[in-house]
Length: 120
Image (cartoon, rainbow, N blue to C red; front, side, top):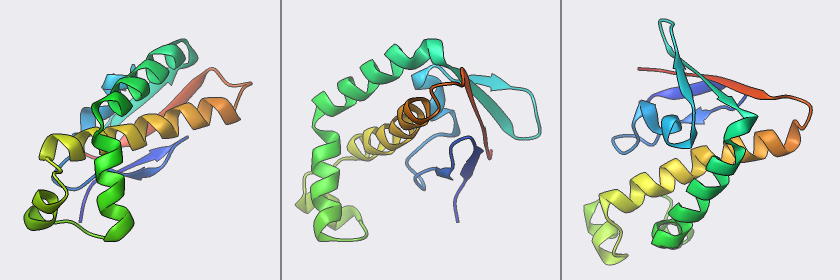
């Protein structure tokens, strides 16, 4: 169960944590469709890098990574044990999405626009 995004980058939104609109944080703009279609222009690359740095500064990614290094799932009890909040999970999930965007631009230096669709 969950919602997916696909196109130039592919993945699954973190269930009950991450909004379909998470890409807008990194400069994605909604395109009209039966799905939400997004495009991210290379001009947003600096914004992507800054958002990724800002997320890392919160410490959320490190906390969630530590939890997932030791366990392959989470629940309220485990989150409490590792001092991981719902906000930390959202930051972690958004970080993963933004990192995919950055890596796509790094790999496709000849392309200026990344496209993906997100399920509602």
